[in-house]
Image 1: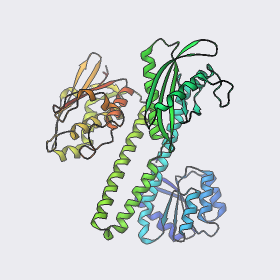
Image 2: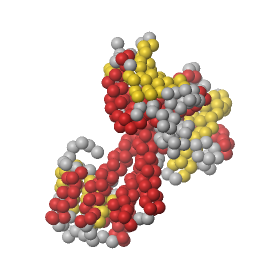
Image 3: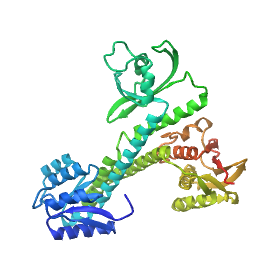
Image 4: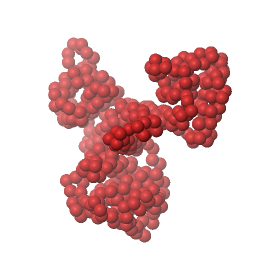
Length: 485
């Protein structure tokens, strides 16, 4: 949501109800610009002439009803959220309104007015997530069409569902890809023979194949398959590349790795809009706390608290995954960045955690150096590394963290050293991958995305990252970026 005024289309026949509604909104949103049509002509004109972030409508209007309003709004502005704020609706009305595209339903009564602002905030947050997902999907589709790497999706029974242009060109070398073709496409036929090896979600298969094209040329083909979940159903995402004319294997591997990560981010963030039902769950938990807490037995209160903790953790996980997807595609314009400033701002952000745990943090004078990078990304990287150092310590032992820099030719390496629980050498690479956790959630909570964000952010700035660690002997994480001359 933008930082400007909240633009609302408010439909209610009762001017006093409109005034009370705006009063509640202004508690949460100091700048509210409301358009208040009083008949169908003004409503239709408002839909055309102005842009709104939200529509709030009563159900029973003198000139129409709320369900007709919802349908008109969704026809004109499909992504504009609509809240029905009414005292005259029924369960049947609510169901019909939801089918028409209603985003939330709030009962209009003195004790429920306080919920309106929360419902508005939740709707605006969901709308923003949908907008970001749409932009991410559009960027990904553009990327896939521009890549010189074939990308396609196949059903579990071997039907080709989608393919980018590069993939279509490769497939054409082996025959028609449509169902019912006179002769089978050799590449697709080979792919289908590998499907039994993908028996469960996230199973992967890689092959380098030698296949004869229709013109008689023998082609070296690289094929990578991954079983994913899309809209509630399993499918196969695949990368395919003609290696015949490639001379630099290292460059090919890097391109495929980036494309594979982009596909994984797409599978986890775009294909599944997890945040919308999660927001609904959090809203109902909030309502349960406000309306029913006193009447709940002790065990029921424990259940509600546990559900709230789980929902909060899930919300953080989704936020981290969305951030990982953003880092994969965002443009990070290089600039001169003071590592000293970034370190001290990261420590300010973590001040509560440092004070609560009694941690000791020593920042060396050598961090007062400039590098080429992206300030907000460096700040996020440092915050994640410091959070890890504060968290992964033996129970009851306050963390001791040391931060310093060292010049390595034309690059600067920044170290974050702790005396925590350490990491076994065989896990040094694994911990920088998405959703890789080495410890249980109860002892060391987290999303499993933090270090993956560190690696992705540093790589996007042209740098490197790594760790030196052994169990029970602490860890030394490092990032390396180009020194600003």
